Image 1 (cartoon, rainbow, N blue to C red):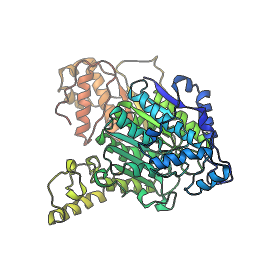
Image 2 (cartoon, rainbow, N blue to C red; image 1 turned 135 degrees about the horizontal axis):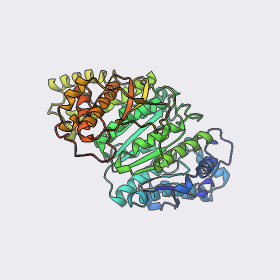
Image 3 (cartoon, rainbow, N blue to C red; image 1 turned 30 degrees about the vertical axis):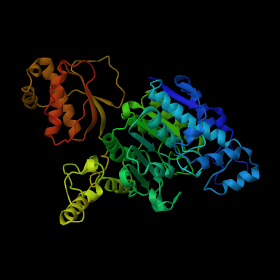
Image 4 (cartoon, rainbow, N blue to C red; image 1 turned 120 degrees about the horizontal axis):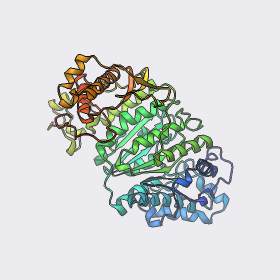
Length: 525
């Protein structure tokens, strides 16, 4: 399954022709630095390389008005003075005689990537483009953006390929208000954006960038805004946002295609974002997205203005798309208090629309006024006594939604391995503990009675080591474990039931290799 890389050097043609400190950071070197780093790392050669094509004006019209497309076409013939005057009519935008051509290439690159992925030519991919697109609106350029590349790609996937559900993940540090405006009443597109907000004091200074902006009409719940109210958000904050907001909602939405507005001004070193997430974090984020939509992930470059941070982050995304292991995230993986407050606010705003965000172990009753028909848990009349009681109950539930939302301290042992036979020749990394201990014999015997296969000598010994390993995980002393056993299916059933008996609400195991039989898990949710 190949990874597509879509690019065209002619997208470097547009550049700022006059002094403008606000706009000078959007420069051609953003693309050339990223491409050079991909080449130096041997990553470009591993990808299916596609030359970007221009989007047609009909394709641009999937999102933009004919008048706006015509206005942009006319910039090709304007003088520098006229271009500067037109640029001044928009917020943080500059035009160049090559802008229309570059912007059509940028949109066309996104469409080529969608075609490659949805026809099976590639499994996933990245489009390296400029100008970026997520701020652009139906009839207005905005924030360096001319045509809304990702929004056009989403509409194109729907019209050309018949895709019904599309997830757009916008990890740029600025709110992609252009995408939000285009899809805010559309339940077929789920838009998630995290962005520097600072309670509305950061560009683009919009009230609708806050967590309580959840969409309009039938699109309520399909706009998910996570505002960062402080700078300095790091790896733990980004991972917490994915694990506690995006992924639960995304799994419930069940997209057929994932589009990423991949802005890297949210990475460490960027002057716009002032965040602390390392390039390696974006490899992990990309891997998490690949579990959705059968791995059909199309990333399209947005912002990113620190050339070193940008190029490193691009490489990390491409490595993840290619299937390379993600490097470990260093440093403490504990989210900041401000990040948890933001996560709590968005979970509270979205809980009426997504059952996956309801409090665990409780099913709050929601009023019809805040639930779409297909999600109504019970018939409650809006405005009546039952509705007010339900709203009070919901408020109480939501007030404690994130009381438990934190990442536990890293256990003393990151990974332990339990082997059933001596393996003196096996060389383990220094941070992997080789476990020799076993659970008490009485405990092992109790669990072995469930399956005759576990009473055999080798399987019994293996079960004792597995139970000891599992006890370490449940006690918070071990983060994860690997074990070998000759009776894999029976041992797997014991592991799952042991975890549930200790109060775990969800247990996740991976069986590597051939199972001796299918595990009997029919009665375990």
